[in-house]
Every structure is written in structure tokens, then in C-alpha cells.
Image 1 (cartoon, rainbow, N blue to C red):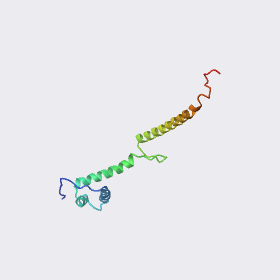
Image 2: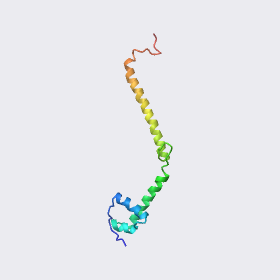
Image 3: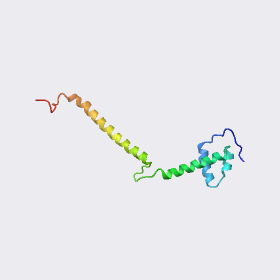
Image 4: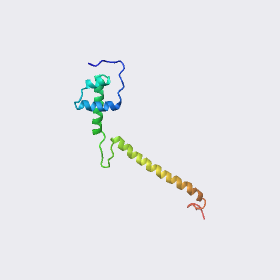
Length: 116
């Protein structure tokens, strides 16, 4: 039986990542891990649930497309929008450079509306 403590010890992530697969492989029990790290069995079962949930999400939420781009629909939409914004910024930058350099010659080039 594990003794309940008012304040549990903080177990480093590396230890939790090693402990959960050991439980899943049947090498140790949740009770043994709880004793080893001085936490409750409930805490150990939360670690196990988070571990399994993260694994399940990685297999379902992130399909890999032909280009190797992973992500949800929202991430792919945002990635496409980001690319469009980059192109718009590049165009605006080019136009600004042309405008800045062209300003030097504006009075030397006759406009189509000016009379000769």
C-alpha cells in the first residue's frame, strides 16, 4: 500500500518516460513505480494515460501527406496562408524598391497625360 502524502514529489520527465513503457511491457507494476518515485498509484496511472493519449494522437491527428508535411487541417490552412502572405510581402517589397529608385527619375520621364 502506498502512503498518501500531502505534497507529492516532482518526478523528472525522463524518469516518467522510462517508467511508463516499463509498466506497459509488464516489467514492473504501477504500484512498484509509485513506491520507487514516492507518488500515488493514481499519479502513475495519470502518467500512463497521458503517455497513451499522446501516442494515439500522434497516430491520428497528424497525417503525413505526399510532401511529408504533417499537421491538422487548421495547421495546413495556416501554412498555406503564411506562404501567401510571404509572397504578398515580397511583391510589396519589390514595388517599394522600384518606387524608391524610380523617384529619382520621375521628372525626367514624361507622363502619358503631359503635353509635349
